[in-house]
Image (tube, rainbow, N blue to C red; front, top):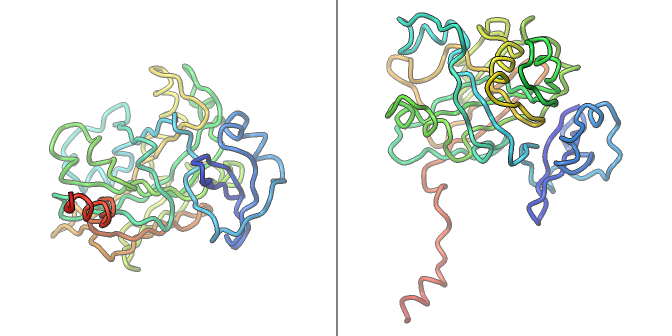
Length: 295
């Protein structure tokens, strides 16, 4: 089963299940109802109407109130390739946040913000939490994960490095594409290793395994739950391996027209297109400008 969101004309979001070839979606329920009992909905056959995928607008099935917590340095080879190579690995993971509004889906166009030389790719796994966690043990936290997705933590490097905080560089418009959620029961334990590969215009730029993660999903969620309550629908991005663009010589960043793909075993392929900064600006209302000129 692959879970997606469907945006309605009134802005409401439904949750549905993609069929095997991705051409149709069977509606499960509305977003709030789904996240009130995700385990139950994932264990039942979808019984709602079936819609053509091409006829609907896909969005991440993410609650507006959800928190998206991301692990910054979670593969030793990625630590070694960047500016952190000479630092002692901390006991606890480096964490930062994304806003849900930065998330998008496969097929979305991702604009390069003004002032950036390009965008950087970071293929990784996203974990979806389906139960409330407070002072959880690692085992309790891992058991609360209801699904996983492919994710690309696309980064504006210049903005990221302006300050010690990464928030701006990690929240560009549409810069967090996330694939359909696959139930955790169909994925298994990431520690045993899922193959992860990122490609730019067909060329492999990252190739690793989730078995190489430093901080496990359960351990990281348990650590977070000691400070704030993790709710149903919250997400954890688990970090990226080596092969990012800024660490190369010379640096290699995504440019308009580039196609970036993240493929993760059992989770599928996430494909996005890079566009220029003009796509961030609303279209010009020629009629309104003409009226202003006449007045």
